Image (tube, rainbow, N blue to C red; front, side, top):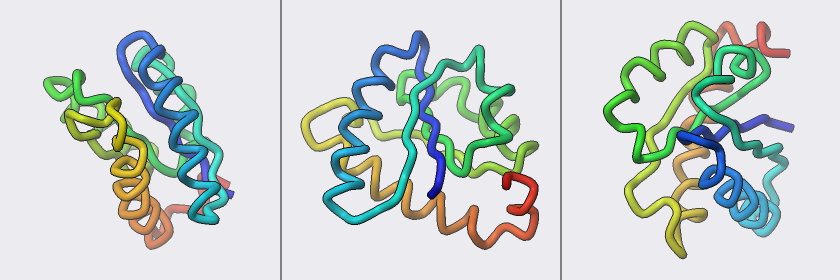
Length: 113
C-alpha cells in the first residue's frame, strides 16, 4: 500500500480531491492511501509519504515545496489547473502513477518504510 499526500492552502480542496482520487484508484485496482493536508503540516507528514501532490494554486511555492519533499526522498508533482474539476481526479491519478514509479525506483525508499 502506497501513501499519497495532497496539499493545498487550507486543506479543503485537497480533501475533496483525495476522496475522488480514492474512488479512481479503487476503479483502477490501485492500493493507495490518499490523504489531504496543508503546507503547514507537510514536514511532519512527508516521512510517511510515498508521493506528494501539490494544489495548482501553490504553483508559486512549488519549487520550495518540492525541495522539502526531495529532502524526505518523496517525489512531488504540481497538479494541473483543472485538478479540482470534474476530470481532475483521473488526471491526478495519472500523475501519481509517474510519481510512485519514481519513488519505487529510489534507492532510499526503504527509509519510508
